[in-house]
Image (cartoon, rainbow, N blue to C red; front, side):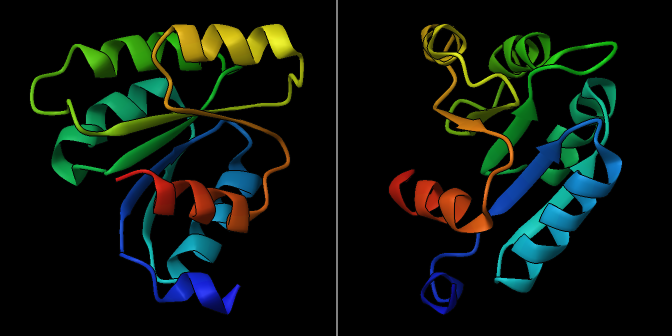
Length: 127
């Protein structure tokens, strides 16, 4: 993992209703030199996104309230966020879910559980 510590620092907003998992991932990414924040639902994500100005938002697809699809759609309509990446995160490993995400404009798709090094590799390739 040390090779990823030296990469460009990015702001990452993690959105997942699995509270312990999302907080642990945020702590790990922060330890690896990124600036990560974790929220546990779509409403919180939409409330913080303008002030935090993330480079990438990583969204769980299956959340109560606003799901990841709805949050992604709302993010894409917000002015000033055109260059922000939106990555999907799901426990659904089905290829049709991956295809749907890419068709709806997600930049990447990850299946849970996702190792931090996979996120860092995707960030390195994403602008």
